[in-house]
Amino acid sequence: MPLVTTKEMFEKSMKEGFAIGAFNVNNMEIIQGIVDAAAEENSPVILQASSSAIKYARIGYLRKMVEAALEEHDIPIALHLDHGPDYETCKMCIDNGFTSVMIDGSKYDFEENVALTKKVVEYAHSKGVVVEAELGKLAGIEDDVNVEASDAMYTDPAQAEEFVKRTGCDSLAIAIGTSHGAYKFKGDAKLRFDILKEIKEKIPNTPIVLHGASTVIPELVDKCNKYGGQIPGAKGVPDVMLHQASKFGVSKINVDTDLRLAMTSEIRQVLTEDPSVFDPRKYLLPARESVKRTVQHKIRDVFCSSNKA
Ligand code: G3H
Ligand code: 13P
Ligand code: ZN
Image (cartoon, rainbow, N blue to C red):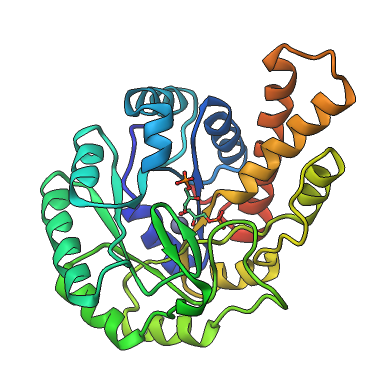
């Protein structure tokens, strides 16, 4: 099956109450781990690359590795630009075969965000590509965007309605309390499901996206720390909240941090337990398996997209 846009998978997700996992990719092992898991679960999946991932892996390699995944598996796969910082980056990805792009105008004021998003939508739609936009600010660190927790700004439901109407964007990333990275909450985890509900009432036909949605899986954090890592006190969004979000209105859930933990914890264990190892396959193979297990758990037990391909 060729690459698809997110249009059909999102329509199905809104009708049937499940979410699609959007997993960040940087290299071959991560791509393989994700698509092997999605294929085993017969689930649609979104592979997304940030602009720094594209700089790291190089766009041609990413595209060809995703093509290889398509040849191997018969499930709907979308290739998405995560946190597109400007029009030029979005255009470059569209011209290189991405089927979906995010333009992240959340760092701008409302009018500037509208104007930039509209410009990307016009070009993307002329090429059959869909566009995710963002309204509201996530606390924490985004790609090239640094927002202090104190400045965190939830998405305003009325503004969301106006924004979607004026930009014509295909999906909308919202801020309801999540943040990027491994340190999302100081005390108890809390998401504003009341705001999500209001947004869904205002824009019922627009797929909603949740960024910063890693669980920061405690077992993986513990394993990293056990084998020499130093990430004490890391905390993410509990599975039960992500499950609730999947059932009640969120169509796309972004995960990067959990994949980083999955890989790194495994590599740390192998190299610590056997310092004589220097063949990269000895640690990249278990790292790829760990990515697969992590993705499979999310798809099957949390996002509920198994057998929705
Ligand atoms: O939201 C940002 C993603 O985790 C991508 O991070 O820019 O380090 O690739 P990155
Ligand atoms: P996490 O840092 O919670 O994995 O979020 C990833 C993300 O939102 C990518 O856009
Ligand atoms: Zn994000």
